[in-house]
Image (cartoon, helix red, strand yellow):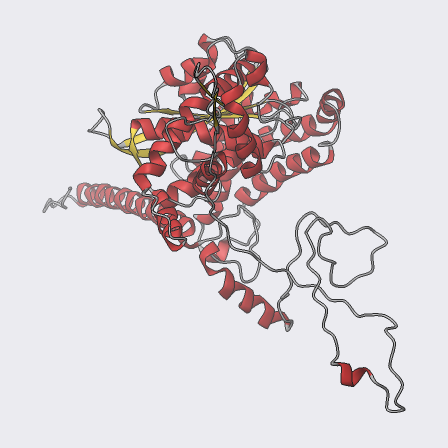
Length: 518
């Protein structure tokens, strides 16, 4: 650091002071910049931990964590002065436009048990002495719940023998079972799988629930069943994988998973990869476990594919798409998210003002409005509408972002978001050239969400074998859900029919598409 000298030359002394002032000013600016960046990072971290999870510019009153739903409901109802609804309505019931406002009737598909409440005989006599006649009835309905029932299925196979020649004994063959050496029926296996992979209920909690029913079912036994069932489901996964690679359009993503016991001891954070393909009604969702996040895994999962691959901005996908001659499509949701983070990094007083980050988010939201408008159109019509409506907005967005980048601090959140947007631009705008393509990878992220919720509950996989089994089963149940099937009903029927499948056609008939006859 420069210090002013004791020179008697006034001009030299002034020059030294100016140099020192310039140096101190630069140091203060650098310090201010670092403070500003740290404050931005702190606000983003606080927003991620305590803020709303939905990426909206505004926040609904009373919006809180999922774990505070009851408190949030009370807060809202007290604020607007209404009582919360105390009735439940099954989802299958729909209300027509001619239905009067008011409480919806309970769904007709549910069984009814009629309970008559009669007046005592003495009260059914009029004061004049004449017996009263029934002229009608008032009916009201309540929803009731019957707890799950565990039962034992006894397979009795009578033996037959000839009393004359004693030639031998005949007996019916053992029924085919998905797990021949197990005493678990398809219904129980389907329940354990659904509870873990759909309802995110860890096996140790299921063990406790079974104990309440008087059944000892250790988590180790449940885990062994799941791994064995996953092995039986592998032919279906292989068929789904073949269809996915030839679909012409694959969305791919990855998310971390911990595996406690594996050869890769140094790093216990492994990866669950997900691929999504197929049109509605024949949606394919496949999970794949791997210890690595490297490009070699993505290349293996996309090998043999043709057409388009869509992903986030992870750089490994760029090289893979180039090597496999795939057209790489970007994700506008990831680009938008960075600008939303730039808004969260602003001081509270500026987060609801009209900043450049707000303007970018609004322009991207306008593109999403177009997508909602054309959702019901066929692929050809969507291309026409995107060229007519979206392309001008995209051109204006690129020009605005390019000019803004020249005036923005590169190391700040807004500068990083702008740099990401423009770097990804050729991939981001590729969706307008084919009506099958989506503007983002949200379908893949939505498919990951059940896995992420389950991971929050069971935290880790104990072994690599367990992680691979989970990948297989998540693919089956999420594909079933994506095609409108109720997971438990599908799994139960699947596990009943699976032991009888011998040919490729037999296994194809069991694929979890909407045409599956459950």
